[in-house]
Image (cartoon, rainbow, N blue to C red):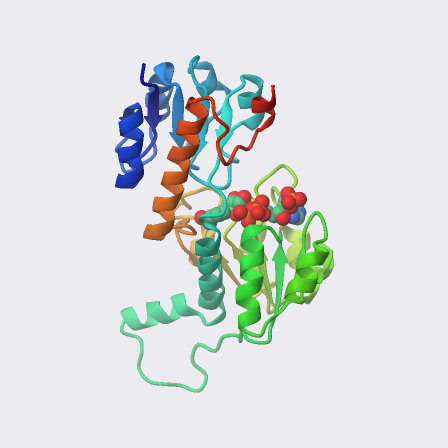
Length: 325
Ligand code: NAP
């Protein structure tokens, strides 16, 4: 019998076709995330689930899904899935690392440039008809070249950021749970603890996963430790930065600017105080949003799911202990 699969949003055509050739698929084709009650109903008969970072896959969902064997999350981050609960039920959870690394690093660099050179403010001036002349003092920003970049989390994306930064003649320091001596040597970058990194960096960019350790890792104390001219970039997960502390820091000019692809909550409500500030640029979680990368992510999510449903080892499992049992 063909396995039954629920897909929580429309995914690119080619991977969807592959899924449909191998499984009986039901798909939530709405523009917004699948409503909770629909998800809870649809998983009742599902053997597999293709989920997104907008879906909270917790114990309640798993309890409603007695046949569920594989959750294939179409994202490298999996903080939306309760891994402990899945492992307890021997449900395999998969993610989509690597294929989105460079695309996300590209966006982090684009955001860094947008903040440094005040692109959002400039755009608003042009569109509102307020651009009157070239001016020696208009929209002065900061140089990226030869500046100091601090990378928090030198994993896949963090490393790609370092490579881009070196191409811009930046100096690079990083912090992580562990030192990476081989990367320090290969790229010519330096390790620093978080406090030192914050104090020395002109740009700080976050590339850790969201965990209990990294939740609100950047708050009031960390903003106080940063340079007043510093620019903070977050393309990892919104809750790694305390949004109230960020608002205060930007308002009181403890730091100069922030650039966010991710917010807490998501989407950011239109009346959020951060949106009243000029020294911030925010885009709607588009880190991996290129045609090629989203297609690769969806294909990887489908391949992971199909392998898991066949009882084979998917390429990217986040709770391999389930397979070991
Ligand atoms: P990765 O390769 O696992 O890198 C994460 C790095 O952060 C690892 O070196 C990890 O160290 C380190 N880390 C973990 N906890 C830490 C802590 N408490 N303090 C300092 N460093 C810590 O992951 P990735 O592929 O680069 O992705 C990073 C994150 O970016 C993802 O988890 C996801 O949430 C986010 N992301 C966002 C987008 C977007 O659309 N905006 C796209 C892709 C990814 P260990 O190796 O020791 O764990």
